[in-house]
Length: 638
Image (cartoon, rainbow, N blue to C red; front, side, top):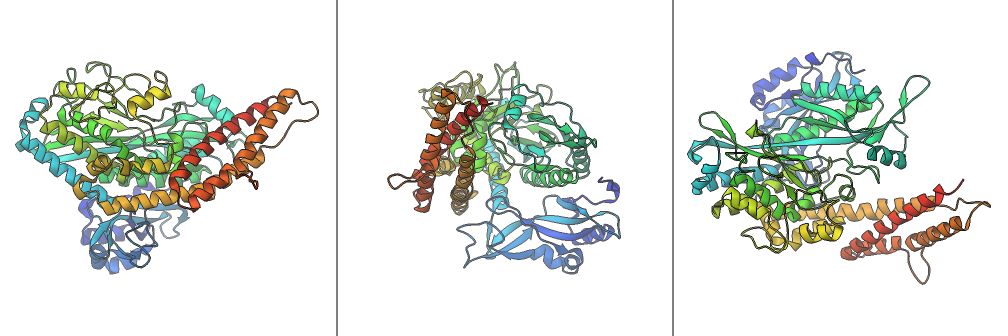
């Protein structure tokens, strides 16, 4: 299976080969690439996919490279921008990133004996011939703004170079480098198999799957994925089991069945735009390869309730290439055993922490995303960081939102790990908002001429202490387990209350205008893009809640039926009466009172989103209690 001659296949065309002559030569040398697809990214992170025959592309290559292809607003999601009566959108190639070939392993060419490939060309979306819109443009503009403003800050505040190893002044710097990376967690299973939540939960508690040996089709698919991804030049670093999953069963024919496992794969960092593009292509390859082995993949944040969800830890770094050719890390301390970070690093970390209410909408804009961010599953729920017990004593706290990653032997490895994103987060917007927030913090730290010690004191401030930048009514650092060592009330008081619904999360953009202003970067992340994103996220939230979640809840409630017979005890009867009362309160309407499901739907229908959000929290709590009651009831029945 998948035994193709990969050495003969084309996997990517790097930026230096995007000229007309190079493209003609490369595509004619690789007849297995039969199509071209322009990949535009809308505000939701969805990418376009079409099939343009290579012959047509080559015949019109000058026009194709200069003017791209045209689509309309129905092909991309750009609410409040590309509306039905104003929907002209062009897709113009991005020449500065790798162009990858997407292979259809189910369609093998009789001429070449290789799977048919499509050259995917990342493209910027242009609305009405003048306005660049969509996720790629936002990320590019934000990164450009970050680099420009950081160079300006370094020139205007030369004191900072006392704490940066390898450079004496801004004059030594040739250019700023953005280094980003994502880690991909995902679940795989055999078709038609349903999760046994109790087995999954028990296996998770016992750590039976975490970093254990893979076997059977999961092992083969994982190894094949890593092999193929290396041909793309992703520099794969690791593939392993994650915490979730149960052992598969071996059938009489020797095949594996009842597969339900969680995996993770990692690859090398790149600049911000390339890192986001890489993640897209990696997910396509992983899904296609596992499909060849009869395994379904899901990149949902929380595919199985009550079991660990899938994260996509996002790494954020900043370096500088010097005029002498050397590369230095602009976060790393000159003496890493004396200071955790230099002022640029501290400022960047503080910027994300202070402005996270305006970043979070892009990290977790869906019901699925927020379902993952619950206490007890190693997923962050608090706006808090960990630096380590001391500068000379590194540690890794897995309960915080954003952590500091350091290596004494490799200063270039110093970076931040944002732990809240998931595989369906729009990485382009997450990176854009994060770097704009970092710039806000760096500007505050440097213009106030703060030293590493002063900034460490700031980020370690206690509740009620005033600071030059961070909010008085918050704490921002904890070296403790924030789930075990604090009550929910203590967490909320120290680190802020996490949004429980998509509506609450999105409203952070309006409740904290100064934080939204920080991530907008004075136009790098324009207001029209913010409004477009809000329209998309709110519409997705209300539609999914109204037409998918509520009907699913009703189906679940109908499955909670009376199961006891003549041997029932008074305990069984009491349990069932409590269950049935809750079923009716949630789902049954009467002339006098409507059930909770109906009240949520009516609030959504009338546009009362604040009420709908409040009722959704009630609904989630009631459904959780109902499930627990029914499990307890069934466990006492023969």
